Image 1 (tube, rainbow, N blue to C red):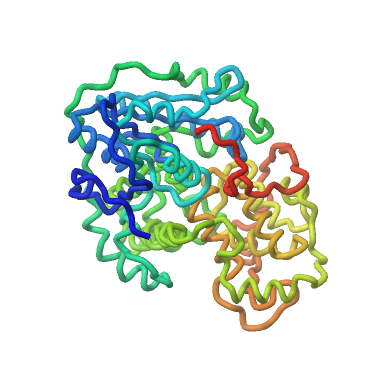
Image 2 (tube, rainbow, N blue to C red):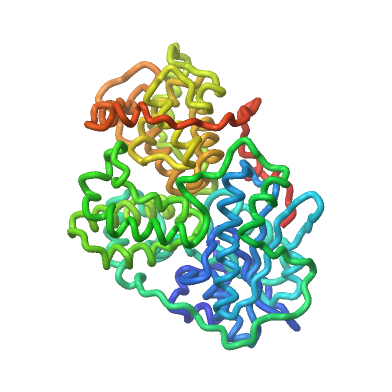
Length: 492
């Protein structure tokens, strides 16, 4: 498929490899602005999506209008996700205004519906600039808007340090990916915001934007038709200030011992806790890596962190870019799906009902402790996720249900769910390297014990931690992913 060309001002940009056109429409005539539509890259600085819009706007002598909307009916909408998103949106708006860029917001609710708002804003736009997200509804919505819009829509990668397009196509393994990715990192580490040289947009709008105040967000969230059984995470407060606090903690407490502590889920200093802020774009990888470079920590620790943030996270983003459905079971390695299918009818004495799994009340004490991190904190230590995910294969009736259950628990509960990295990790849990022998239920898929956590010096303390999970509602039946099949209501 031949990609539509970029306008010269974007094609000649130093960040051009981040940008691609989703349609071949001509630039709008008699336009009022360039529309920058953000869904998940929720930061005002070092945001290539905003910078591309500003660059295009400067060339066209048009201001930029940044729009962020939050729907009430996105899959798994809850107090936890809404509160985190709106907290980020509050800081995004303030940051845009500080840059001299107009920002508007809409929070979808019963008394204030705005159907087709992106299209309506697009009627006065020369072009729409959005983010290039390979998973969840951001991808689906951008593609749908591009098919219907009368103006061009350009999507920009803001999630990766090195744009995936720089790596090229058809890199099959992580080692090959790293051989191309590592030499590019220094080139793409330089950040610099594009400065608008057109006056801030202050013209008419097709709706009344929502003006949020921090003190009013909780009441607004409580009024929405979303899942109120899943509360916000105290461990991961929303907003830019919370993200910066965790970035400072990374530099002072985490990095100095990262290589040795990272795999120990019983040590709180072993993990950065940045993944929710990276997932929602409150922080970008350039900013994080600049902090790592300035930290007083040994080279081994810095290299290990870089391997996790860039070597693994961006590998999973690269993989998702080449998959039509990154969240589908079909992405699991073919050999793994085959061996799991051969054992699909095996007896499953460890099977558990969904309610027990969701609420962390199974017969597996270690698995329950893992699940309660999701329930209470909206996050799970990466080393625990491997045990958690592999045990789900034995707890569910068949491998397809196991995959759907893992995706459901991760996507509903975790602040960093619905992400290329979490789907990539789950694919590794269900595949990875073949085991040395054929086992019931798993076939050649390797299993994982809990000894690496339970037998740690602080293992007993970790297991006994008094996390009081919320009484979340239990779905019946297990939700599917109809939103990506086109059944999700289109109100963009």
